[in-house]
Amino acid sequence: MEIDVNSIDIERLRNDLINEFMGIAFAISPVAFMNVAEVEKADEDKLIEIAKNNGFNIENYLVKTR
Image (cartoon, rainbow, N blue to C red; front, side, top):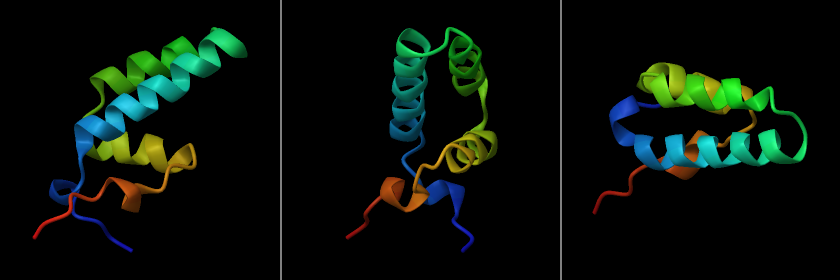
């Protein structure tokens, strides 16, 4: 399913990815700090790719319109 990047809450997705990688960095491997840096600088398309590659359900980040 193709999702329009404009229909995604990108900042919420970015924050959730950062929180996920920070937790991994502190609990498991400091190498995950590199993922945090990548997420911080990623454009919308790259951010979605990173999220999908890490098991995030992008549909959870769809902006609900009325």
